Image (cartoon, rainbow, N blue to C red; front, side, top):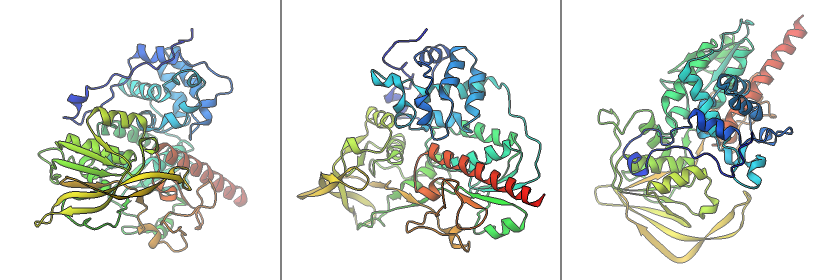
Length: 467
């Protein structure tokens, strides 16, 4: 029987006043009963509009039907047909602008909580330690994956399922890419990432850490070692700054550095070898998920006041609505229609404030958002002792600068010929943020899947020609 409720089952979560003092996960997940009740809200549409909104095309109605039947492991296996990171995507995917946006139930109420159901299914599987993926018989073709973030994981997963001998190279000491260094523990517990990475290992993927491609080894070295194709999924980890006065003061961080210290090095722990200076008043410049993650992390580190300074209005904030809502509950102050012009400092070289101007919105720009325009004589100073810049990132140029024939655009992103991810260099593919610039986990995964399919087709065609 269909659940006719117009609203989703509420997700249990930590109390805001409690969670600002810890890095434990904020949302606690559905119980089995809640998941089944929510699944019954699905109409099982034959034309499956929600699937069209999923970048990896999970058969959403089919996995939800398995939940209704109480076959949670069956639901997990359905998701695995398309996605290698269900526990992750169930937590960080922007479902509200993808699958859930196209859900028919959303016409006269809230859409089915597809993301929450995906998370429940994956977490239930890991908790029950049920059916594991069996390693496929080798087809004796070797593929190199550079970068162990979402696009690399997705590409490696699909190729391993086809029997390829996949080796993944990661520059850091643990795999996971942005999933481990960029997204805070309270939003994506690292144990979840470790479990998803273990799925790769169970498929036979060899993961080599502390290997910097472009320095330790080059792309040409990999070909000489016998790899037939290479996928570049190195992300976009080079931070941007505003180039305004004062950015060199002590207490100014890029969000990339700040979150890496917090997430990867546990800078919030007293035993950390790389602690973060605890600021009392923090300004985070930017309005995306990274900015919100940085602001909420700063609050948990003990900051008394945390501002998100954004030059457009709340309507244009690119961060997920759920994350904005959680930030507001935690006391994060949104200074909207405000743009920094200068970071102020004291005689000791530390941040003492940030000078801003008020903005108003004009006509839409090329992105479709209304263009922010400065108001005359509207200067204001926000008293802070730390500033975190979260205005975007670009790809690190290390690989492109050491690989002859690999073309990039003016932003340093690798140019691909089509959706397959094939670059200007034969049998070198790329996908995710290194191609698009900073985007979402699920879009990067979709790119990795397309490249895996293209690599398989190329190698199969070569085999036919050699017969």
